[in-house]
Length: 324
Image (cartoon, rainbow, N blue to C red; front, side, top):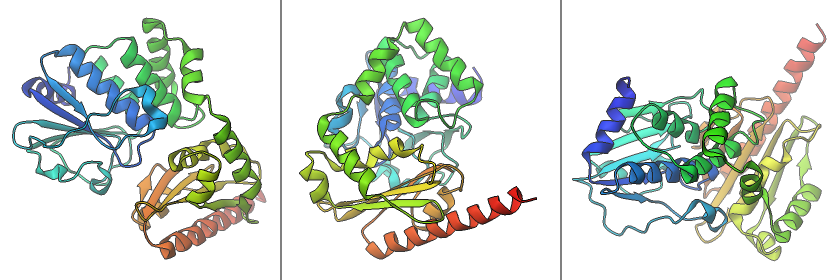
């Protein structure tokens, strides 16, 4: 057990009460890494109190129940934050009040907010990071934990289309074999959609605006989403279904959460690096999968312009090299 694995395991072993948090606007990888780590700690140390905290998303209820905690024991407990590179996106108020925090993440490093940090930006997902930690410590695993990790990896790689290397396939292959995972059933659980979402996807496809540089975007109001019987989180997660449009290299979904007075901007790319642009607008993420949240419509408009310019520069550069 090398130093980082040993340090994480020893801290988990030390505390009776452990909270596990992730980023705001959680996706399946955030849930997969959070819930799998929670269940692994509980399986290994049945006497510990382990809580998965943060907002809940009904669409991902198959991961299990998020715990409601009213009063946090900042002085005598451990906080583990997964899948979150920056302080502003941790889905818990006053998280820096915890005396001890561990960070487990696969994004490029943004903020340092703990003494013990496991950051592996070559990993496909935070779920893969959790798997790596479990396999290199005395933490235990069962079929439920393996299933959560599998879905987290599948989701963040869009069914192994990007962000993977041979190591990812080795790890997943071992999971499926060792725990006899029913891959078809897991895919069905994750990808099966209600008719309302399918109809919303049709609306998005027919309304998507595409410019001559290969930048596509849609601004969709919550009223329109509700008219299809879908919810705002469903619309945000549909962005991965638009990965294979020949004329598009960067695509962006903008949805407005009126209740929280917030625009959710989800960005994906098949070439131009977008996380640096997102960071300029107080967002972030991966090179080809990023997001921004803001209450200012001007921020959204300026972000869209910069993404279009990025596509223009990328296309011109590609054509220049292609002509040589």
